Length: 253
Image (cartoon, rainbow, N blue to C red; front, side):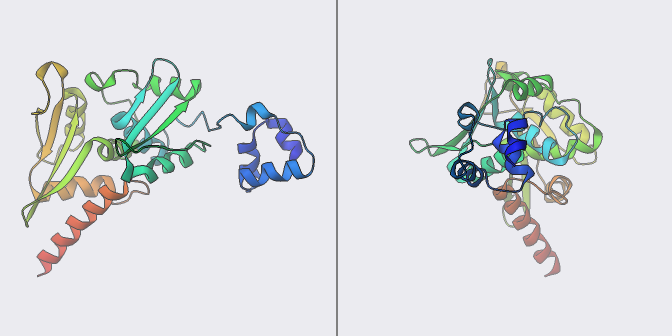
């Protein structure tokens, strides 16, 4: 193991290759008097090529989620801040990028955040349309057709909502730029959707809301993005399953 570590100079890669916990590996090296490069030991590690090619469900999903809730700085930083209740979701992202980062809490605001500083990762995200002050100008990225549903699910988990309307109906709402949401609307061409300026924003900010206001369309949209997924925001998935389950019970009754 140590020979491999000396060759790759990465505790993360060594731990992954030999299927051993990184901290256990570090302790093992120390007990045996083996030298660890302190500069790499204290440096966060990750798979910096994760977003180089969006060719899996996981990559497309996280790209969509970062499109919604992430911030790409003008330096090499990426930051995501969520409600404290969604902390575990950021841990899922850390696992996906094979990172050694820690999610930090902001108890005063009841939020948590993740900061990732990596030149290659930031560069790849900029290459697919993410950059500072993106919220007023983002457009749908160029993706392979079979990646679009996962990307939309990621974006929806970040900037979308699914909700009940009374006891017998439900709705969908998604926030974004007019151009971005128009592409989503065209992707689900068989589902009636309404696109209008957001009531919570001034016209010059280019913030729109895409809506589905009936049960059939809501379930059709949610089925399309969630039904066969392997990754999602737990509370959004739970709300979808709850509405779908209640609908099935009502229909059977």
